[in-house]
Length: 60
Image (cartoon, rainbow, N blue to C red; front, side, top):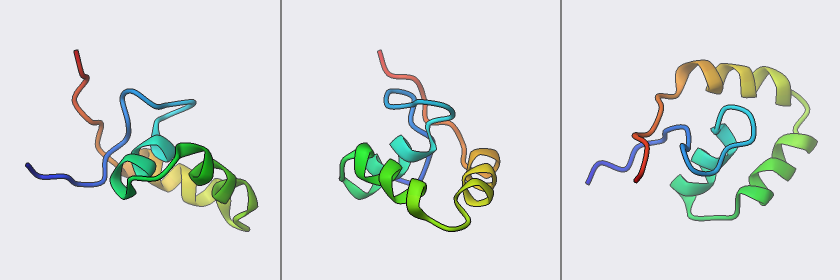
């Protein structure tokens, strides 16, 4: 199975970027969201990732 970095379809608040990063690394999405809150360029990085990451297929 090709496990690439994708936006999450299950764990999403806005676009699923933090949920996708959390699924990829196998960590809590809460920790990823905290990281983005305290990151200096958080909004710019989030917008770039939201526009470049592909969507994961929806699960049943």
